[in-house]
Length: 115
Length: 111
Image: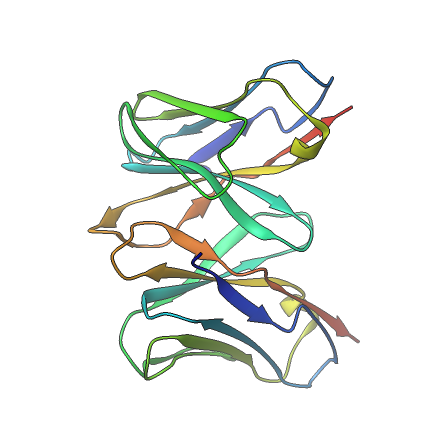
């Protein structure tokens, strides 16, 4: 979907290094999410944002931090990458009314490998 | 914790056969959404169910939400090779603002 882009698409990094993934949207949606996808676990929520500078933790937030200084950008930072954070990371956006999302639009994903 | 269980994990069918995947929650859901992810792709929103007992259809796909709003199903009639992918449900628990995804059902269609 053209309204949401993730960068980079692929990254290989070394254990212990910080890594930042970027999600950019042009839809002006209020809600943005970071998920990770691993075999057998489906999609697990890391962090989400419900507005500029408003963020909250998801199911698997340990070792991750986020920032949202503008409506269109949501950054995910792995503070000190570990091999267990090797995964495919998806960003998603939505408009929602009182928690009732109108469906998430996902980005194309970032495949991160920590060696 | 809040979980949405999805079964089966995998399903192989012959082209033309029907396919069903099920999602179950131990507690009441406010609503449930369904997504499809093609191999190597990203999840794509299919539909949202909100009302108890709701049934919606999209061509060969039929979506149902249980009367107690604790379970849901997706049924595909006469599968085609284009149906290949992983189907996810995502439930919104009452009183929360975060959707919880099921683990997905990977569908393979044999021509």
